[in-house]
Amino acid sequence: MTQLEGLRAAMRQAGVDALWISDPANVRAVSGFSSGKDGKVLVTGDGAALYTDGRYTVQAQEESRIEQHIARPPETYQDAAERVRGGRVGFEAEHLTVAGLDALREHWEAELVPTRGLVEGVRLIKTPGEVQAIREAQALADRVFAQVRPMIRAGVRELDVALELETGLRRAGAEVGFDVIVASGPRGAMPHGVASERVVEEGDLVTIDFGARVRGYHSDMTRTVAVDRPSDEMRRVYEAVLEAEEAAVAAVRPGMRAADLDALARGILERHGLAEAFAHSLGHGVGLNIHEGPGLRKGSEDVLEPGMVITVEPGAYLPGVGGVRIEDLVLVTEDGYEVLSHTPKEKV
Image (tube, rainbow, N blue to C red; front, top):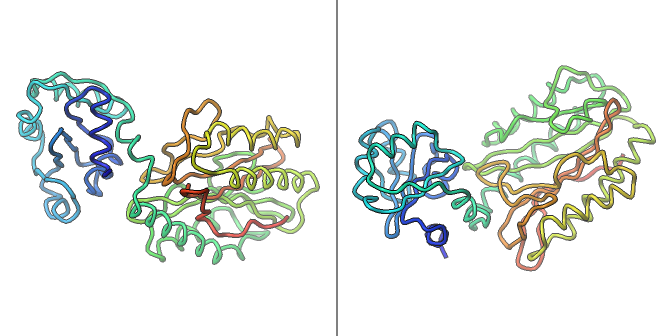
C-alpha cells in the first residue's frame, strides 16, 4: 500500500471525503515538496494536488510527486473549491490557524471537519527511501562525532564543541537537525541543556545530543563521555543508564508495546534508585520531524511495527551534580531491530 492509499484509508475511517493538509512536514510527506511551509496539499478520493506560489514554480515541478497548482490565496481556495463542493473536508486541527479556517469557510461550499493525526499515522511506517535518508543522516553524524570526540577535554567550552559538530555536519553535506546539546558537569542535569559558555572541567561527564538532516530526514543520537575520571557516584549512574538503554534496545521487536518498552527501562533505573531521576519518556519516532510518533512513554497506545524508526534514550539527572543520557537510533525490522547509530558507548 502506498502512502496515499494508506492516507485515503485513514480518511475513510475518519469520515471525510477530502483532506486539506497544512502542516509543513505533512505537505512534504505527501507531495515531496521540500518547502512545505509555503505549500498546501488537497487529497481527495481520486486525486491529490499541491498548492504553492510563483516563487516555487520550478522547485514544485522538480520535487512534487503530485499535480501542482501555482497560485496565491484567494486563488488557491477558489481553484480547490470545485474539488470539495458538497463534501466533508478534513483539516489539520493541530496546525491550521483560525484565520486559515475562516478563509476556507469563505470560499468553500463544504463541511469542514477537524482531524488529528491522519497523515502522521501514515508516516509512522517509513518507506525504504525514507529509511535510507535517515540511515545516511546517522552515518554522517557518526563520522562527525568521531572527528570531534578528541576535542572534548578539560578547558574547552561547550559552545566550541557544538560549533565543531555543526560545522562538521555542514561540511559533510548535511543540515544541522536541531539545536546541539552539550551539557557538562552540573549542567548535565538539564535534559535539554543546549551548549553554553561553560568550560569543561576534569572529572566532568559531558552529554552530547545532536543529529543531521539529509533530504529532510533526521538522525538523533546522544552519548555521554567522561573527561578524566568522574566521581564514583556519577560512574554508578552512567552504568545504570547504560544497562537500561541496552536492555530496552534488545527488547525492540514488532508487536512490542511502546509503553512496555518504557516500563522496562524505567524499572531498571528504579532498581538502581534512580526512578525519580528519569524525568522524560524513553524515546520517540524520528523522520521528517525530530520528534514524531510512535511515543515511547507511559500510557502510550502505540505498538511497534516494522519500518518504524525510534530512539531509545533513558537518562538520569541529579540537580546540582550532573546527568547521563545515552541514546541510539533504532529501526524496527521484520524480526527485531537494527541499531542505526554506530558511535561506541564509552566506559567511564
